[in-house]
Length: 107
Image (cartoon, rainbow, N blue to C red; front, side, top):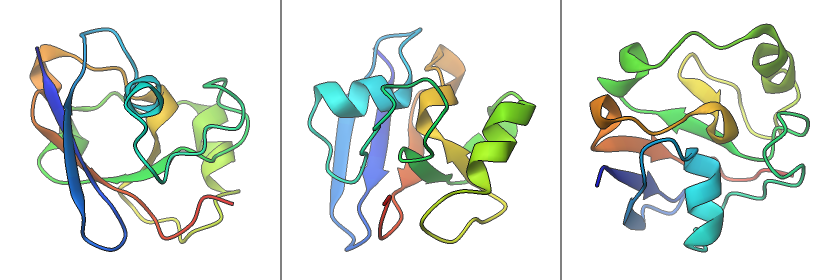
């Protein structure tokens, strides 16, 4: 099963297994990863599942759709070139080992 690593703002690291086809946000919520609020439940309507995707995985992701780009304008933490919403990042075998950093705040 593919794995993902979440790096907290304070440097704490948590790695979890994620079933293919499951979003990083869903898996983070199931595993009680702190720092993912997911107030809208994964509907791409709140920007509280904001993450910073580390290289080389950013280039493996599909392009963000317009709705995600709009929501990224509303993030509580600084938006960066590697900012994505974890509700829009669906785990695939190609993403095995993905590393994302969580911002200091989501709200």
